[in-house]
Image 1 (cartoon, rainbow, N blue to C red):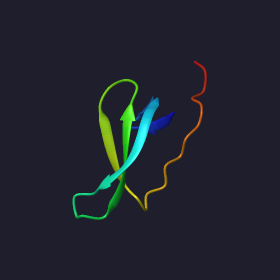
Image 2: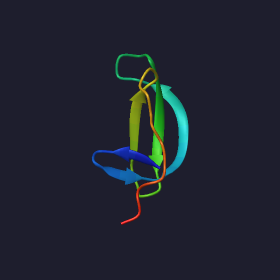
Image 3: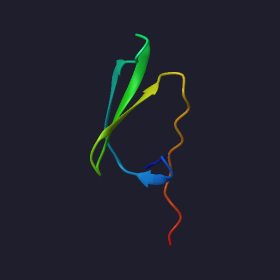
Length: 52
């Protein structure tokens, strides 16, 4: 799971892609639907959300 836009989302799949400026990026597809593109230099922190 990754915290994204203020909520935890479950990663379904990752792949590589080109960013908007042509550099390498990581493309994440969410179980909840949709995708997000992160520049390859970004740190992605993953973990389990706190139980509520």
